[in-house]
Image (cartoon, rainbow, N blue to C red; front, side, top):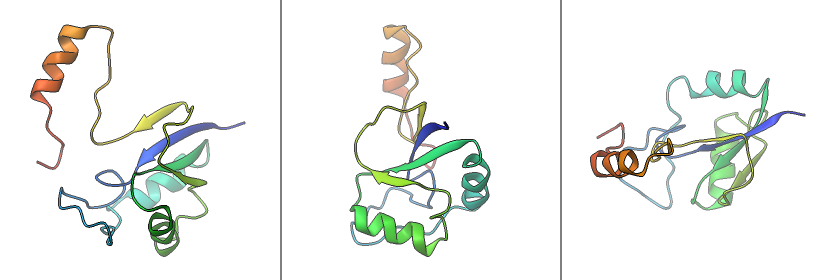
Length: 109
């Protein structure tokens, strides 16, 4: 049984750069197709997004990713790990965490 990975859509798999449009999902990022193709060999992949599920599903189909992404969810499900552009890994130290929060910047800014 493959472990599940939830991967964020905006800023990870597409070219989102902070200008949210609820009706338009930006194009796929360079390298994302190959990344998902390889990752799906060993992991079950779910797209983790707050976007409209039908729009996100259409984006998956339009980008020929339906063989690699098993589902779309907006729920924090039980999984092996999450991949997101807006997250901090908690290392057990709240002081470090507070500093990371105060200094946080998304990679594309």
